[in-house]
Length: 103
Length: 155
Image (cartoon, rainbow over all chains, first blue to last red):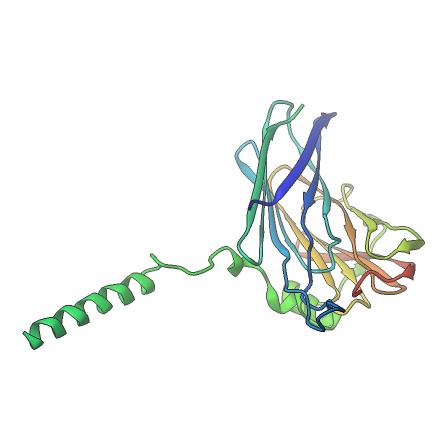
């Protein structure tokens, strides 16, 4: 199962606003399941990378303090038509990525 | 025959250990880049030391932290750190000072990226949210108190 991403990017005045919504529980491993008394197993996106036109521009690390179904907005100087790739990986090794061209 | 099988076995295991030490078989290389010590630190100071090496950050008007004064639901608090006005921004770190593990996220920028991050974070209780910007090897920060009516950590 790959992690599901939905990303939009548009260029305004030479700057691309890259906004990404990721479907992921971001489970910290500390939250208790009331019915069993055991914690829900940890499942966290730990690393996020953004590349624009083949160059890595953003390299992020996340903790459990990032909300479930994370939203991320970064700005990158770019031209319309540039290829953007967002890739994420969680602590269980599950990955997800999305590639599109800037409008 | 015994000697022959013994030799075979030692040769096979020898080859496997060589492969491991040469880096051909590297377990979980992806996760190795996650700073577990920093992100699972229980205190903000410990986390920042593990991540950035220091806790000294100067207040700066060029770091603009946008967060709601009152967050009705602590599980999804929109936070924006804008340092586009600064030059040479290397990274942005967001910290929720009173959360069980205060460090929220670290964004490292390179190339054409601008010093700007907007995301949604969890806040367990009313607390200071701190945005730390590393630019030109120095740390700058801005902070704001966010009142939380319903906590977002735990059930």
